[in-house]
Image 1 (cartoon, rainbow, N blue to C red):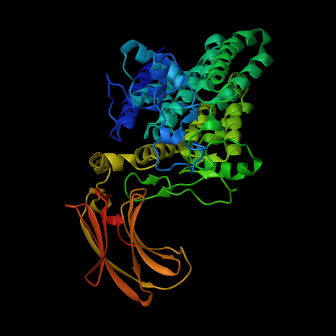
Image 2: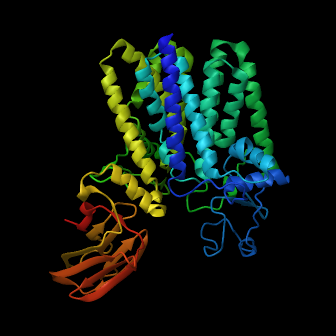
Image 3: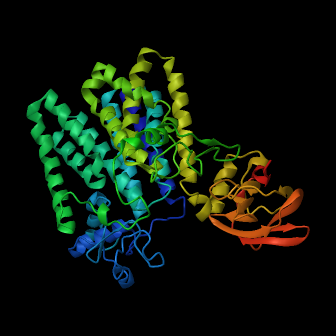
Length: 556
């Protein structure tokens, strides 16, 4: 009895800490909760449309865009205003992203308040709710000591790529967060054999992310095998939600299976999902084992700014990504569900459906960090359940599991700070420097705000092949690193000053003798200036710069 009480105390304390941490995450980039206003997020638009009695977004497409022969062509009208990654069909904008978050949160809130729910608040609710459901499911599956429960809760909160998901809040993250919440809730009800609410949540998961139907399908198979009489209460709510999704698609596009991808306004190779086996090998690499960068400067464990290069087919879409085995090093233990009778009977669908979703994602040729949330959390649940069983049999394994959880949590937290585009540094640099200062006792490793520098370096300017880049100088860490490098273009040597995807350049004469340069940053004006022998070659307005002293200097 005492252990049971201690267990719930641990659960309560950790839940409060996770809620606080998640709340900090969704606001850390400067996106404070904005209440009692009409907002411009895509799901806010969708809720506004629903409340007004129509399915399209209340945004009028630009007439010049509509006048183009093919307005959804990625190359059409690049100068015209568009709702990127929205759907343009019969002169209206729609969302191809599932309507689930709008149905569950945004539309009800607007009906009650006549205002919009802040999208970052909605993502906080979805991620916190998903964590709580996963935690309660794990506690139902296995008994554990309070200290071990604390470790498992940290893993569920942090080793799932959820911190990364909350760094940037847009339509993508909300759809994924909605799917995460629904699957977590569905599994919570499923392990208790409350099949009507489980079926409802499996169905709502599809309304957020259509391919999450895989999890519901495995659940139906499992129930059909174990007790056919219970299939009906599971399937009926799933069928009702599926029918409503089909009606929603038919009302918009005249096709119950059309989610809008055919009419999406997006970049090249992005507006289609064409499964191909040739995508599987690079997909498995990126989603499972793509590595990290290690730095001596906070936050130490970093997502590479550019994805690792491995052979991949043409038109393969990729964004910065770290493999799931780094985020949750204990992940392979999830396969142990199939070999532990108690767990196999209860949740074999969890690792099976997670692996199936992983395989589907690899088939699509779309590799990006946020997609890992579709398969990683359920696999983490399975791995943690197996971990508890194994630790009860062999206590020495606890040390290994704790180390793996600690590393995974640290990496996830680091990626939650840097995000895909360094948004905390970009939007709230003073906040980043303040947080970094708590963890950086050594001055040369401590990130600083607008550090003045005046550095000298040299390099020969030797004629070679086009686009052969030679890095000369850097300040800061990717993706917001200031760089000076030599490039060659059409037989000409070019000195380039680069920051935040903006560049200025200066043509140089070729020389086999070292040419001296000087790079300095003026905090008062936010300008980086490059000179040679007292002559100014480059001047670039870079604004705020964050860099530790060790991250400033010539490339050696």
